[in-house]
Image (cartoon, rainbow, N blue to C red; front, side):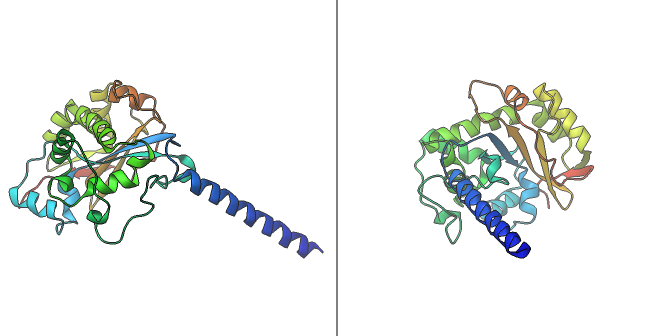
Length: 251
């Protein structure tokens, strides 16, 4: 009798778990169920170290492209029930297609948005279609129009790239080792806001590859990046150690 009760209980728990998963799966593909955002930015030279076969990386390395700032990876709407980053594909595309990013359906962008995007997203510039992936996987969960989605992403990235953090700290430390504390201090000073636990730093081979900035659920384009970070939730710190390098394109 005791074993039977345990079995019934386990079946009940399993059934409840399946129902909760199914419910969360629906939420994870439903537009506008957003409780936070992540602005993901790549440091292109380090990103390309392990992706030298990518067309954009081959071209940038060939030209020894100057690093003017962070590249746009994407703006990711999140829902904590769907973590980590399982809130996605809220439009007609329900999963990543086989093949490369150009296997996604094409997206129509206004000429000025496409031009601006090409300046900060190397994959878009060289025709390897990261913008399609970002729109179908993430953008469809927050916007009806890809122009609106990328316009907001560009506004946020521009503020960071024009700040003293990028123009002074990052540029002055190319090919140098910096500490996490130094980077966080420089970013906090530039944004004039406490960024403790508001950024995630991702490294590979001890080089900074990506910085993810936590942003709130509602993003008013009229608000500054500082104001948005101030009201954002805390996130995990990432895998970078105490110190790491700021890479650049070189021989």
